[in-house]
Amino acid sequence: MIPRYGTPCGHYTGKIDGQDTYCGAKPTRHFLTGHRCRVHTPARLAGKPEVPRPDPKRGLKVSVSKPTRHLEVA
Ligand SMILES: [Zn+2]
Image (cartoon, rainbow, N blue to C red; front, side, top):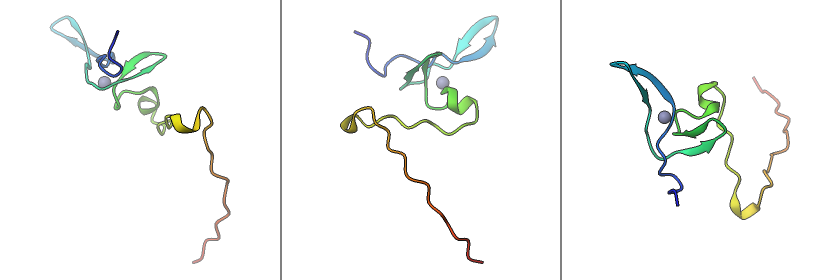
């Protein structure tokens, strides 16, 4: 069995001496694009905020806080 977070990051980091190199950092999470460390997640690379991991105690429901109205007081 593959260790849950033990797979190294597969983010391509370019060629060194003609050899393809990859990030290789751990721990990683698994995405559609493969295992990625925390600095190479698809959201990070796209410059977007990280999607929170669902809380296993709450099941698959993701709580979204209700929009609040703020009054800007100068
Ligand atoms: Zn990485």
